[in-house]
Length: 166
Image (cartoon, rainbow, N blue to C red; front, side, top):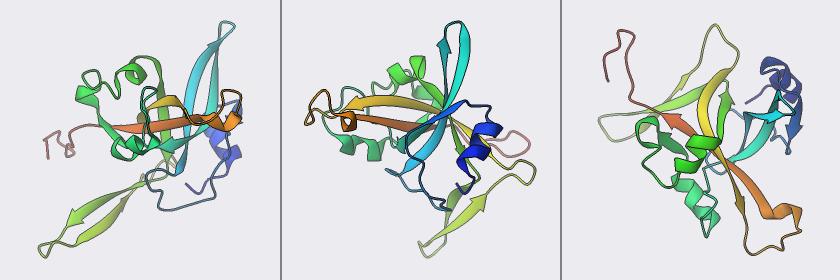
């Protein structure tokens, strides 16, 4: 996530930014802010926006924000079965953008080695994602800090170039 906000707006043909973008980073961790692209219908026209969301979905019914740390990824095959993702899967889909991502490989001695994966042809990747709004019950209803936008990345079974499940 080193691209400037203007570059993201242009790449995804978004009209505006909502939220405060984070400074550039090569290693974004759960609970940090990430840019997502979402669409809404506005007077018959699709309006695409760049939103800044917390990585780790906090369902609207959650009592505490901490649940988000367990919901950074969602398996595509089961999102409609899981109460944490069901509503967002039907109504709040997004593109979670990145320039690359890390896959961790375990060594024989139990250590983990990060492997950075990226596209040699495309400057940005777009991951399927879901987003959700959560209201902090400890804050007054008129407090603008009451609302938190959070997101998760959809995952699925890995396949090699021939389509074999790994």
